[in-house]
Length: 395
Ligand SMILES: Cc1ncc(COP(=O)(O)O)c(C=O)c1O
Image (cartoon, rainbow, N blue to C red):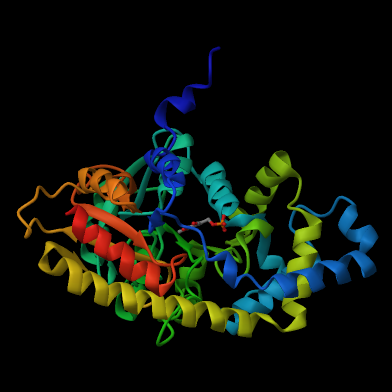
């Protein structure tokens, strides 16, 4: 079979290979990127689905508009205004998860050989997705306060990228949050260089103690011209349920129209049933309580993970405790005398029945082999303590 040339540039993720080992009985996993299913508001979703099937049967069982189910577009416009960004319903389209929004951006914007800048490290699926369209991906360094804007500016000047992809709030995998000052600088830089910024924001609502700075989209109201060079991807996956596959894309009209056209050729529209369910769920007013539960549960788990890592691994590991989201990004310092290779450490850890993801695959190039990602989302506090003790045994 002669497969398409574009497949030459991507491979199935190394992380998926690791996941095959996770079925081992008794394993404690910090490896996944899934939310905790115990936190799904199943009762609320059941109620919303039943109401939709009772009252909107024809609309949800029929084909619908590519742009999305109108009541959901209206509800998401309301969600965005509660998050500080004025967005009209026709300024967003509903997508099948934010993953599809990213794919549509890739399809709409990237030609083979185009350069794209992303944080190093960043969300692996976006690296793969943009590469599928032929992007040449360039990594921009990240610290505890998000992407280094001086370096980003230099990279933009050097490479003139087609777009810059950022996860400014509780990044996956970095856990980092871009500071307010850097957010403003990113927007000013985007306007000055006329570079499209793609803000991916599935985790912004999952803050622990205090809300993060406003999204780039919300801040764009303060930086003239920035809204015209900004696309925003939102998702209900981490706050409600990933199985609903409800995400959305907000973008300047030209990009949004073309992305809608590409979506039409791809899946016609996202499921009306889950879109209507999401709209009905939001109308029921259950979201604030559901999010509050997710926030407090993850906050407790993150605090326990931070103190256990500190106690058990001491200076063998360095990390910045995240202020929200689902991930710790850590680095083996070699202070325990062992080689600083997280992939080797992962193998020893699996033998001790604890799993995490080595950091290298999250880099488009020049990986730091000493890095790793730990998710605290699905393990309860006892499992977290036990899992970190096993990590120590695996050092
Ligand atoms: C940074 C980031 N973007 C996008 C996604 C895709 O989420 P979904 O397609 O479920 O909305 C994820 C999922 O893990 C993610 O971590």
